[in-house]
Image 1 (spheres, one colour):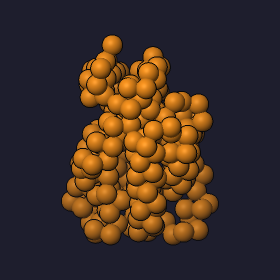
Image 2: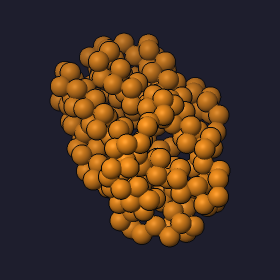
Image 3: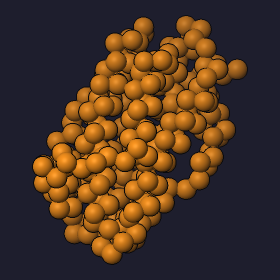
Image 4: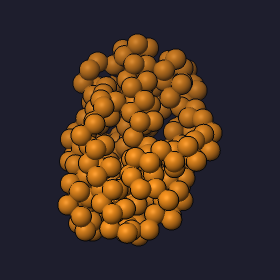
Length: 222
């Protein structure tokens, strides 16, 4: 049984490492072989995901009993509010204006992640939900950094168009510490973390589904 939040997260990360396979989309962007249309699809999908996650994090903040949990999820929600406007220049650089983004038909495989975050917001103890979200921080930041480099190098996207990925690629140690504090508060309060591995497995699986759904139609001429 874990006595510290960091110990719990480290154990779960080891347990679920590489369980779901590889992210097939990010390498395509990194090497410049993903189609511009797939970049536009990413922006359009995120235009649905970001507002949904924003609401989900606010719901978790409202449900959290401990101040640490409220602070963590409020911080996540604030981040979603900051990045939402950054999707417009990303979509525009990929050839999609606001009307095209509105008319885009989302893929179930891309939206499953946000749907599960909403499920966690309603059904999971906030401290346990924090474990699922925290375990993915480092990997998601690495994905975004690789995409940002690829878009600049191979696609000629400027800083404004890449700002969405730059935001998530920038380390946020204070936010991670808030998340660890939220998990620790749950441990100290006797919250059961028996389902934490289940939540982490599903959340990571749905995120990989997002990327690989994009990859299925990405390897076309740029």
